[in-house]
Image (cartoon, rainbow, N blue to C red; front, side, top):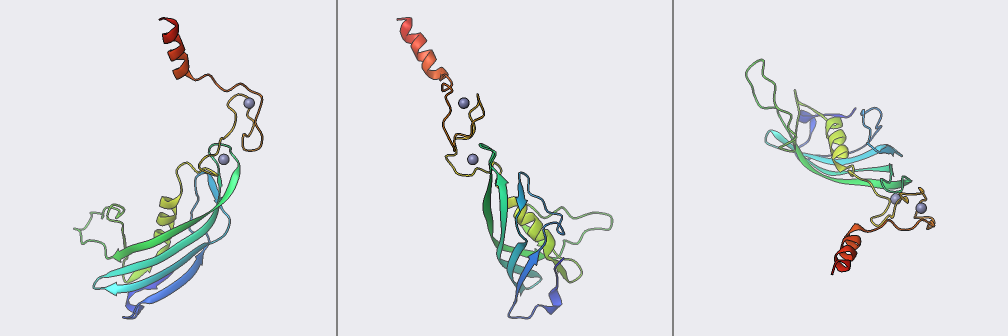
Length: 172
Ligand SMILES: [Zn+2]
Ligand SMILES: [Zn+2]
């Protein structure tokens, strides 16, 4: 857990380099696993009430390819450019909306907690359908052979567009 006191950030800004344990951050990636700790390099500088945060988050991750199901190593490299702001003042009993739309993060009582930022930025950077390479042929739908390794003897699946055309031509 990395916390920074806003009042202790000097006028010229503050550079931070920390390593965060994904487990301690309660962070998991769907379809993948972390190979190392998350590296966070961030520069914090005050601008009135806001604290601007720029830098980079990097972490090596192993994903399972959605096509061939093999695990492949990748590196998430996430540029940071956001800000921490105090939560909006609300009447007692009302809760502020989570700030995800504004892409801002909140700090409370002079304390910036970097964990939320790291967790959210990493989750947003995770590919929805990770593929080992863009043109991965995947597995044969008939025998399950990994077509990256070897072609199988299965006939290619019939292409319905051509079948329709053939039908059409036959009818002439
Ligand atoms: Zn693949
Ligand atoms: Zn096959």
